Image (cartoon, rainbow, N blue to C red; front, side, top):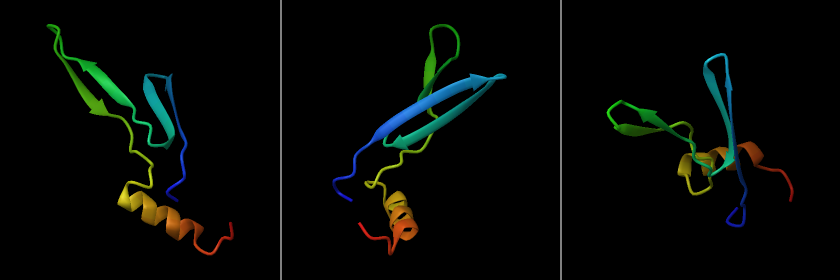
Length: 68
């Protein structure tokens, strides 16, 4: 798994809702205006990377026993 590498992210705004799809360690961040030139950021998704222990365990469990 150490040689795995891909990333992509898509955001769609539809009917005042934002839908985000991602693969890999792409990170979507909302920049929210709070008036008077003030802004804050908020993560919009989780990174899907083998560097993330929970994600690595999920991948191993899902693909256990499948040949290369």
